[in-house]
Length: 274
Image (cartoon, one colour):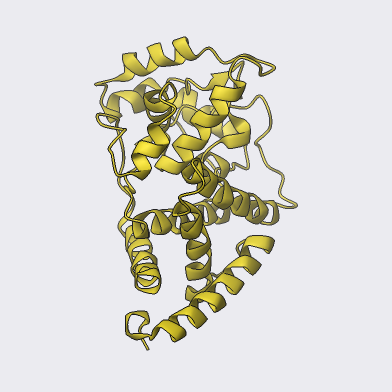
């Protein structure tokens, strides 16, 4: 029976079952396959946080929930692999990073508390100046320029504890291959495909919950998005109220397959909680 045809009592039972299934996956991490019931459960858990009006920072908290799930997942995904990724290697940190609004709010909140007290202080005016410089630059120009991420500090991620999903799920088996791809535009990077897949799965679950909550699921360029809201403590509340606080910030579209998966889960979730 479709969820939109369920009685209130049946819907509550489906919700309880989904929440139970979702909680188990949240505790252990994503496996090789994710069933529809488990996906719905995770999205429902995230949706409940996103719609909890008593939590002012609930968008960033929702991102943290999904990123924590992803960390558990990736620990299993890369266990035993001889990765090329290590502190000080930042060749991949010249790519344009597009993420969700909840991830942006989490990074901005962390920076408000830690920018000046971190071991390597983060100079927000310099980041803001780089964002201004990049404004109006085409994606092709940015790709060819290969400029490092403005959030890099002394060759390391300045927001590593709260880095967004695309950054968390990118792993390479060879630092040298990354160097050649960046500096000489040659060869292919041997990325860990399973980790990338899990990252996309995590993003789909987060955005399904965002969409079902009636919020904007538009992709937002990381650095410009952070700088657009970091000096506006009420930006998250305004976004949760439906305001476009990222007007003029570059974004990106999802792949058709990811978009279909997101819309499917959002539809099931909307019918369940509507």
